Length: 171
Image 1 (spheres, rainbow, N blue to C red):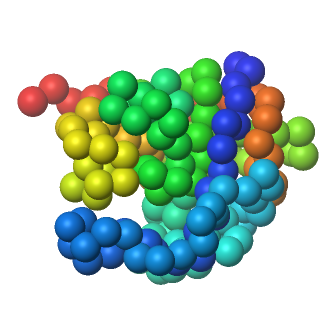
Image 2: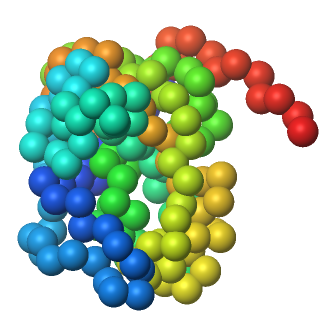
């Protein structure tokens, strides 16, 4: 188990990055970051746009490592720009695709299946800045399935890898 920090949480009721990036993000609240998020097993974050969406059951929550943010492009970049849900400091979640992990923010552990990479799209060049899509390649976070009900909080947390990811195939 390792000590990590939940730096930011984002629960967005609206899908703001639809259509063409040249048209800009859809209107919505100025800030959808929260300090507390309720998690439901196999459904996602209560109130989020992907909550209980059948097409997103294996990708209802996206975790990202703060260390992988392109701060050279945008020093203040965070979840508002990347549209991920959980921003962690202290662990490289991108290296754990295929693993099962737990995150305990002090209110009990919540397990997640880290299913697949969150591939950065052309929107990153608009919301973060030119070159962000390329900078986030292989570092854009991981799409997850929550396996337990629970609560995530901004602040210190404990992170544990419960099952190791399968070895990556070499091309």
